[in-house]
Length: 248
Length: 247
Ligand SMILES: Nc1ncnc2c1ncn2[C@@H]1O[C@H](COP(=O)(O)OP(=O)(O)O)[C@@H](O)[C@H]1O
Ligand SMILES: [Mg+2]
Image (tube, rainbow over all chains, first blue to last red; front, side):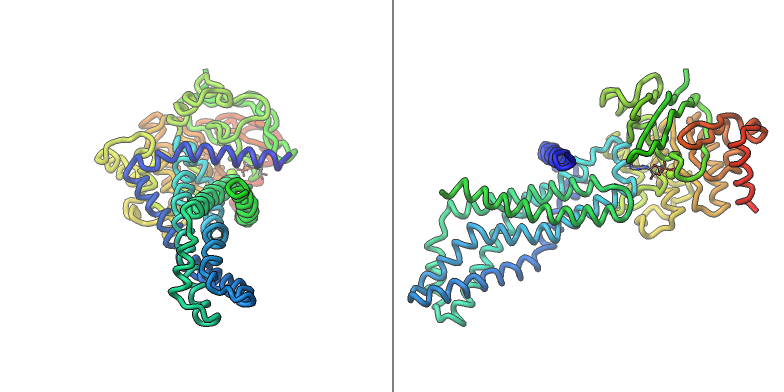
């Protein structure tokens, strides 16, 4: 019962926030705040995303490369790494980074605000917390997640290429041409769509958890933890579902 | 007709009745103090006036409108008329004191910049915080945060202000200043003031009427003179406990 209630509340937060997206551009102050959120979401997570995607690509190249070598098919290494990254791993690992770095921070920030009566204070001033707090944060995630996923894909491919060249004896140019030959527009679009959905879900879950924080300091801790756990689960399940819809 | 009235308000949290048939009313233009031990639901009572909480049963009327059952438009109108000082100040951490105080004027009333600047300066001067205008909430003391919250509560020139523990945690000198300010706003602008407080001495000095809350009910609601002279055992107990605290 409580679960159904939570799902309902989170869904309402999502719809209300999406409807409030246009207001983000309405005034100078709100645009400036949106800029701050974009910066926090995109640039703030760049170091982590870079390291994560580099190693994702390197691990992929090593695992796949060793198998391919048994069949003397190392020339396809680039294609294999690229397809895995673009379709699955780039949105997935970038989603994980965003949930851990940005989602948790949003839940903790809004949770603290809730406990300190700041959300109530906004309500009194007839400033909608959804418009003022939720919309810019969620929109920043929606915008940044696909961009970061694309970046992740590029860095991952590069990492795979380095491993290929240094450990598997695959010529880097050959690797890249194999990779590019398999990079299809459809794969890219589905991958980016996936990232966009992850961004929306991470933002919504974190905002809903933060705003629903119960009183007391333990409430903030619990909200933060739940935002990360629920985001991880949603990323996995939605990732599967989107794949299921587009590839059969 | 009273400006604000509580009629048999019941509010439960986790099966515990925090308000249990609370009934009282506040007249326009008076300074109304609510006293009682901590955890008796004083803050909860204030939150009902502006529908931050809704009663489980009973009703809260503000100016003839049932707050828990009115349109969002009516609610906006009521909230427009009410300033609220929260217990901890409730300032937004990423804005300076000045920006915090300007927020309701900017986001909600959409006033021109010059007028906003003037009103913010006036409000900050009233709470003697003009020096700290550029500081962030984390850089100032708890008492200053509270005064900044007070500036934000009065900056919209509302005709009702709800004060949640305006003087707790402040030094005696500042407390007196704040109490005087509450009285002055009431006298000069006719602002109806509802003051939740621990500071019985202050309440006796500046309030027109005092309400004692206990176990979610109104135990006594009278003028300071009658309050002190009351022979209600709960009032006596509370007064003697407060006297003990003084010494
Ligand atoms: N939103 C809430 N959820 C659950 N319990 C609450 C909530 N708000 C207040 N309470 C409980 O109601 C009681 C009264 O709180 P409060 O009105 O803050 O007391 P005080 O008289 O000190 O201001 C406390 O026991 C508190 O735990
Ligand atoms: Mg309180």
